[in-house]
Image (tube, rainbow over all chains, first blue to last red; front, side):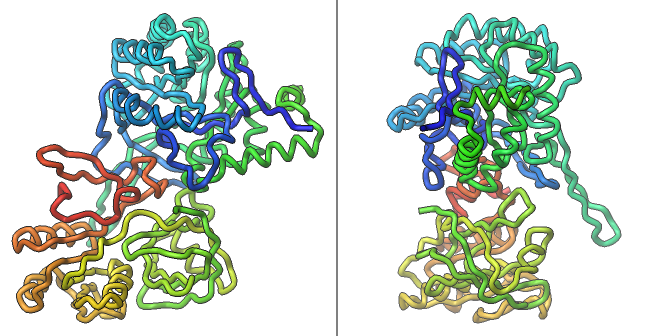
Length: 305
Length: 238
């Protein structure tokens, strides 16, 4: 008998809980050489803003122990070009996608929400927490009142599946999760990257030379932070939670489900192993088959006993 | 098509100071000079990109200079070990049927030795000149090695004497920039192979961006996806 890995979020149904995280997977078919994207639950696109963005100048990457700091700065093609060039490819290939959107003001977020509604986009994830843009969306993700106002405004303009992606760079994640739920979102995804600093230091000719890469830390090293945040969020709200942060194998997926995640996103590991999502999916399915779990719901129930 | 491959190490030896030559067999059928492969170096998060030094009958040879954890992992590999690599990645040199001056510096000479071989096989006349800081850092295989100083100083002399119609270059950023400027001044096409720290290696993450000039507009290009080879005259040099 086939194993049912599906996740039912009411407004949308995922064929399995494995998604790709925004910014690590491009816009549509970039990983076609490595995996069959239609096997996944879906992809979350690179963040799209109202206008195209060139992103940050200077060094954008810094590798750490078991992780990576990035300061890409939301380089993206903009919503207009996304609709014109990227979306048709997604549609033609029948790829289930969640459009990640990022704004600099209420107005920008609301315009984007309106466009997504008009274009009949099935699911969107709101980036309220990019640590890499000055005067940017981080403000929206750190203050519960502002966040509530933002979510409510987006909800009014967008009727389909609405996910808010939270930042871990706060002290009181519960009140932010509650603001999201009260604002009417359908789900929370967490976490975005952890604020970090890479220091490049050299000592040449009796003098230090230094440079800093200030950005968002991702990869295996942030998994414990993510697990803690997902657990706290799940204990605070009743809406579904999508876990993100340092997942590199199916056991990590089990850990996230154990603390309350209903689905997961795989991010940085896509860079290390571009076929990792398919491997995780296969291993998860094998684990369930070998241990007689017929549905993902059974597995989750058992994990949360 | 880009693909993950398994490589079986058949040789590893020291080439010169801090520089090693690694050969491995795989099912990769084709890779052009200037294209690269990215090798998984556990436990590092990021794969390490390398140009090809030689490719013959399924055997790939790369040269690498010790820089840190990734290259230390490679140095400790033994004959018979396997590595996981992604290839072929990026776009290589556009090989023109033109007399070619090839300019390398440091470890940048490695992929040029493969380019030189490919061009010669096509019957194209070439000169490969390379610059190294010290005598013991010389990578063998160039027509001329300059020790100390900068190889840039030799480029105009070779333009005058050898009269190349195209220049291919792989070297540190400043050398690429200066050679591109010479090319512009002397009206000779320059192709440069660029490098930056990379995450995905396939143009997705936008981590290794350079800017190029398109008419009067500045546009981003990823080194791993759109490059690593660019026309020198297009790059918006810093």
